[in-house]
Length: 239
Picture (tube, rainbow, N blue to C red):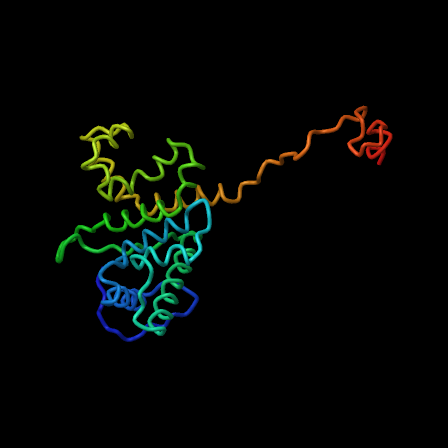
């Protein structure tokens, strides 16, 4: 995926998918010298925001924007702050719409090296895992260990988190010769895995809570809790 490097401002309307012109504009803004090369590249940013939008709780912008910009934002001007934050929110909201749609998301992936036809899933996946970390401890606490491992496996493998970590491979019960097979499957079905994680947590987020009594249930022949000395059925239970 390639883009021109024009600095012409894009039309950041609130509707529709994020455009190539907006991607170019966002790339240029995040590459500004005042961010000291600490801001996320756009592919990692897309992965990060997909995790932010897919987790068990809604993460407000004042939590995730500083992570994207490499710490407390050091804007060059109020105008730059407004432009960066408006475009980040536009990207966030556009991805939210895509994740909820039937069409899925349009991945932002770059060649692993210039001129190559092989796409780099590592940055995207590492960005996703950063988003998972921001949502902790909920991801770990609210999903069973086996289910969470299944949800995160594609991103762990493609992000390179297992390659040099035999302890983690052993914990996940992955033989060394299985690694590339899992990676190939993850690349072929990548969008499906992103949507699967989103749908899982969306279902958990809106699952009805089980009603829990704050006080013990009172039997009809028990003394009334009001202290009248009468049986509950003859006092407050009479109605």
